[in-house]
Length: 445
Image (cartoon, rainbow, N blue to C red; front, top):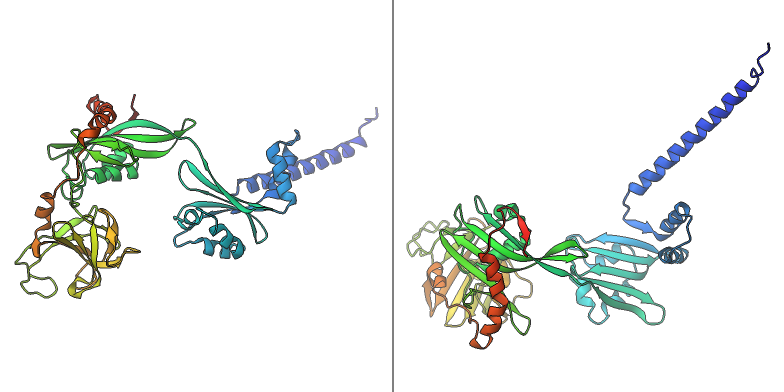
């Protein structure tokens, strides 16, 4: 009997082969599309995004897609730029070959220039353009504010700031110091910004480089900033406790009627003192006040009329107290030096600076904690450090002794004490409550 499939078999094989080839082609094409979709290009062509959405979704176009198609037809492109060190908008516009006239018009907008000029490394800018013409710009100013600028055919560039409401949730954490404050903070689930703020609050009483001991501990109540259940960042410390070498310090945050806030002891004493305990954070004292010290460069017995703080080149140097800049410039063995006059006929001197803070000038005023310069080794110096002097009525004093005797800032006035207690007593009650497990941050209830 003749088999009826003798001629059909080759035909079936050809069909199967053709199907296999088509399948391979489809697989290769799919792989290419998938790989392309996984890439994160710097420039996104709106037209490509719109076409891709149309091809993959056969449902009626949504409003955003309509807008994307309109943008595609208008020839718009969107670029995301991550700000790098020393970047300015002028440099970014030149790099992207965007219109400098548009940039000038942006910076002429009322209230916008400052928001655009103060770029920080890591900031993200989103720009929409048509060729060299800028159509829109977006920049996040803070966790809750976003600056949005768009071109209007009649009005030119129009700017507005969109705000989202953040929920401020009190959270408590505690830790014990074994090696450093930052390691203990990390173990407690704190961000570096919160740990730094803790050091700032108690900096008049504790030198966090020299005074820390193994076994010191802390407790903090601070704000977590949330939006729609998602934690976006951290806010202020509301209350804190720090135990150093067996002595416990406490602080509560109080917001005055004018919106300004400061930290006080539970009984209303100001934690601020007239002078900071150290003008350089997280440094070490390499040489103390000594009227009979042998100078390391001159090799002669020469009074050391201040305290030397060893720190890396470029470490910020802060004004120990509020006052007027008496001198800013170069002076002999001090190298680059700043001298500040304070109340009570007191002068503080900061020597061997690598450079001065931008905008600092003789005759200008500074507030306590303002950055006035940066650690260096100008003048007669063997290594990077700050030479700090404290002169009262023309007599050099040991800064460590003089600063400890400094007067505290103004306490809570009797007229607002009731409001102070109403704000702070609930926070102190949380500090007095059962501590969270060491190394964990828990939402305060």
